[in-house]
Length: 159
Image (cartoon, rainbow, N blue to C red):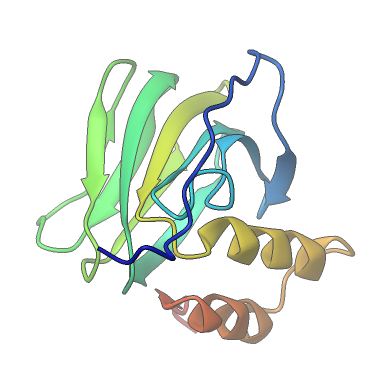
């Protein structure tokens, strides 16, 4: 074991506390960032408006786990013949090297608890995505360049 490896300090985050980002229309409320956990994991709540979500993408460095707190999402992932719907109490695992994406198919905001492990910079990537889209509709090439820096490949929409 590397004696110089960073160690995390215990902390508590109150229910309404945590840094917040707007990532492609989805609100991320961070409960733990990679910096706070010495890279072990990141944990955040997604508040997903109807029709919004994460476009299909593939991670090279981390896995994501999604627990649906409320609402209904449709999940698309590599290896499945058709999208699947997941409601409250449902779970989806987005393994690294396997494409996945989701969107809210309900008429109310959905809430998801998202775990990323290990934390290899996704919270920083999301901050860059927010900054790149603050002035309006995102340019997909610019977004894809940002995500590529963090080992995430965005599927380009069909022309």
